[in-house]
Amino acid sequence: MLALRSSDFSKLLVLNFIVSMLMGVTYSVYAPYLKLHGITALQYGTLSSALLFSALLSTIISGWLCDKFGSRLILMLSFILVSSSLALLASSNISLIYLSYIIAGLSQGSGSVSGLVLATRLRGLDEYDRILPYLSSSSTIGSGLGLFGGWIPVIISSTYDIEIINTYRLILLVVALIVPLVSIPLIASIREDFRGKPESSGILGRNNIPWNILARLIAINIVISLGAGMSIHLIDYYFVLKFNVSSGELGTVLGAVNFIMGILMLLTPKLSRIIGGALRTYIIIASPSIILLILMTLTSSYTISSIIYIARTILMNVANPLYQAFEVSLIPKEYRGRGVSLISIAWQIPAGIGRGIGGALMSYNIEAPLIATSILYTLAFTMLIILFPDHILRVKSMRIM
Image 1 (cartoon, helix red, strand yellow):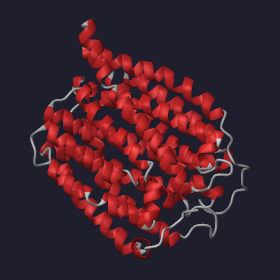
Image 2 (cartoon, rainbow, N blue to C red):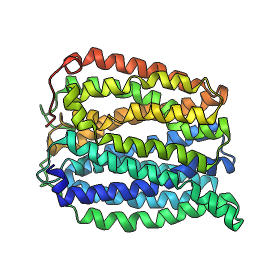
Image 3 (cartoon, helix red, strand yellow):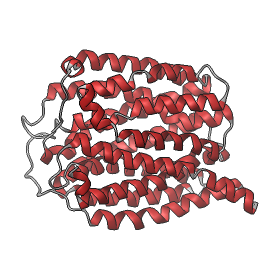
Image 4 (spheres, rainbow, N blue to C red):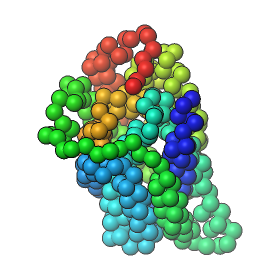
């Protein structure tokens, strides 16, 4: 494969893997760390909403900045913000914890846009349905391995008789220090195929985007992201609240999800050609996850619930890179920053609203968010079939360029 022989692509793979592994460790810590600070389900949902609305702001700005100045600079800035947010979170001050989530949102929005734009501007590489699954696989496997690191603070606490909240804080500070030291030199060494384009009228330029198709994608993203925000984005707190698990058990489950899913993502480009197109493949693989989401609400066993969650999440997300490649392929390269921003905005606003709603629903009935999400996912897949019938019914393999 041409992409795997590219040094720039290899560096991006390494960057994705290392940073995702470090962030995976911190993700396993968030929910139990905040619970020890007395953060309730409603407050946790509010924090998550604040993060997403902050990400929305940086998404709007970073898309334009990527098109004007290139995506590498914006990606470097996003990792500096990551480090700052982790340091503030480790302070244990409630006000600074809220501020840390706002800064984390700024880093998330700018990082997701600039990272995707940089991946699609690597010199000589334009087979996005092959590039994006490999990049997603590297970050997902890295995140999975990092999530297994949720046992690190537990082991340190028991071995050295240190209060667990302090070992959580230590993990956050160590990752805050390492992230910029690893990421910035790697990003600086990657060549971006970007020359800068003169400004054009409109956020994406005149007559460059098939707006009717983009409108359909936005509508579907709104429904899926609202459902995901209501339960999936709060699933760590759901497990902590329902089963009283620590970062160790939580990290094991979330790590297994990411590690298995990362491996399976490597198979999706070939599977897409066998099944007959990226969108068709996504629908066939992801839709059975809705049934599993309902089954999670019917068990009181953490082991059974976590196994169902692992299967559900793999089915729902393993083909996401193909769907993302389908979306990105519709946007001209010189306007891709702004195009990606529009699609991301359509995801972030409903997800932010969903997190707040999900936190409130969880306070009322712990299973209510999962049930609501299953209904919304069913609606979204129905919309995909209705709005993109040609892509769903196509039997010949589709190559996305």
